[in-house]
Amino acid sequence: MTPIQFTFSSSFMLGLAGLAFHRTHLLSALLCLEGMMLSLFIALSLWTMQLTATNFSVSPMLLLAFSACEASTGLALLVATARTHGTDRLQSLNLLQC
Image 1 (tube, rainbow, N blue to C red):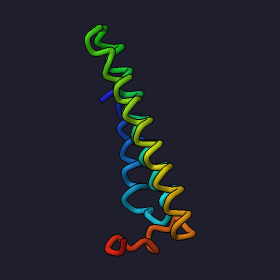
Image 2: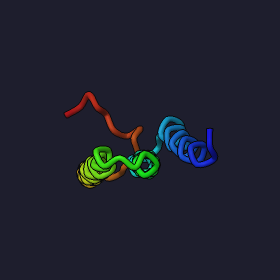
Image 3: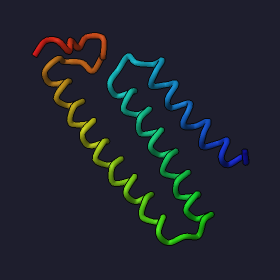
Image 4: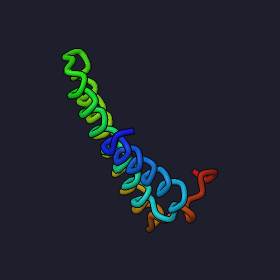
């Protein structure tokens, strides 16, 4: 494993660990997801540059588009949660209650 691959895999794992173990606020969960998507985007971009194939060059842009959609949906959920519940703490949310 090259140092670049190790760096991006460790940054993805750190984002995943932060998502799994630090689940107090919705904003921190969204930031961990964005860190994971950023590491995937950079790794996929470097992989397509190393292959020098033009047919794989669309995949990083597609991942970036899905990441932007995920971020906007997450921020909309954060605003809706803060308006209805008054906080973004995940322990105060009851998923069984409408």
